[in-house]
Length: 120
Image (cartoon, rainbow, N blue to C red; front, side):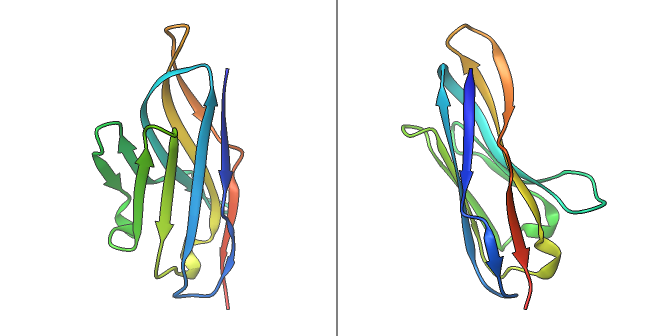
């Protein structure tokens, strides 16, 4: 079994910054990819950013140039640096990971979610 634990959400004013972190632990052989999704009230969950083991990144169109994803393979962590935040960035942010478990199984895991609110 694998656990993803997120931290770093909160309330920030428009134009401000937040940093989200997610740590994976458990029966992990290797992590193929990690990423962040978000879901605002009444909307579908959408991709924010993702990063593969070799460092290849991809971003949702609405966050390009403002958010930066990075990962530490040695620590099994992924970080999302969010700058120039806008009210429309308000959502619950979920960490996601595609993991090769020690058992040999390839699985997808989600974190519990962390609230980000951008408001004056």
